[in-house]
Image (cartoon, rainbow, N blue to C red; front, side, top):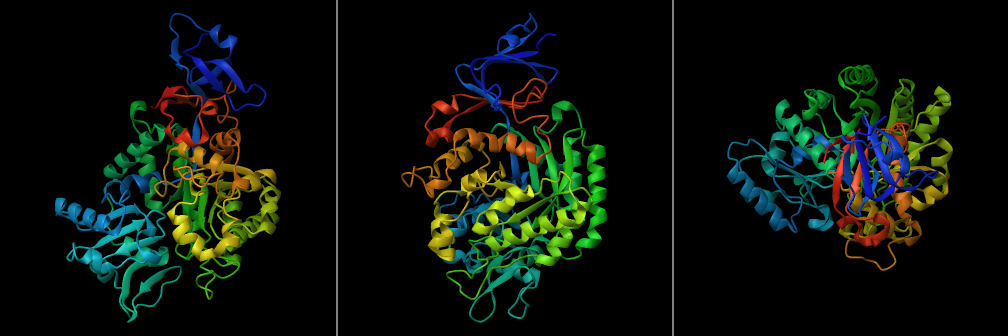
Length: 539
């Protein structure tokens, strides 16, 4: 046997406890074929040598919860993500509208929800620059929308409009809509009016996102919100020549909402079969996505006790506990992996209860259910993750006292519950499985930035000293594993990637510096010099 490629000249961290560090790695036909001295022995005149130049080679990373198509299309609208205040957002809308007179709708994604006091956005500000075309912007968490008056008019929202199920139309004192729409019950009627880009534009956006993710060292993603029409986009994106292939592999979490969920079950199974037939080993559809609740910053996450700043409200569970248990049991019986968004402690509890009900009714199997975000967990529920085999999928960048936390979340839930957020270390101590993700476009997609936060629990400026809730900091090895082996386990692919071991797929990331030699707070600045998916260079 000869090696197609040998990596050498730096530290190689395998993630394998049996052989954690080596100095050379050989790849043949997309697989790891040797480590250390045995790798050098496979070199011949045709072998490519990749000089790590004093950097490090590691298992590539996965993103256990991300929205590639949603984010990729969002990048093509009004660029509001980096706006520092409301005036900048409004000016960005004005400029984009002037530059795109042909656009029927003006849309933009991922602006900061704390830019308006209390997260309340007034349509009048947008009306001042675009009075005659509909405008809809969504905050970085995508659970809140800011609409102008024309968008509200087209959706039929008036003072007489009943409050929608699973959503809120924030109103003025006279009952008329303010312009702030919370949760999908209020957002979806407006979103349904926004024209979809054609298939070619969607595929182009998706492939662009995949290249971007690959540039950060990512080779596998869980698209955590796939609606029926988007399945065709993914299938089209993996078609074509190898040099046109997506730069990442993916699994699709097919969305299941409370209304009419039983009638949707045959469609889920049919979509899975279509993806399996057309996925070319790059695409699967094995998960089903549920939203158990909303988000804390808008007061829509489901809580066991009332909100501190709104004592009459416990937030909003999108499903009753009984219906969620029935739906999770039904998709589990079809062999799908439940993937449940749960933020509040009541949202987490009903998600755990539903998973427990599915296991009880359907019997033992290797189901690996996922609860994503896991922001607030009642102490009594922490041991249930390990007991039920639930994967806790965290977005580690959220575990810091940024303005979202200090200006919106903490005032809503108070100090006692505020000190129980993102308990990554506690769940690991309990023996639970943990995977990491980004929820991009909600927050940055680069795993190196997430690693820095998981290890330090600090803002990029290094605050607070010692870390926020420092008892929940984890070590670098644990954080790296959550992005690699942890996500591979979530994907049911631990026998294919996630560690560097002979026989596994050569999914690799080359860093410019040894991450163990870099101060933890500076990890986000380390350059990704190369990414390989099955031995094929994708970055």
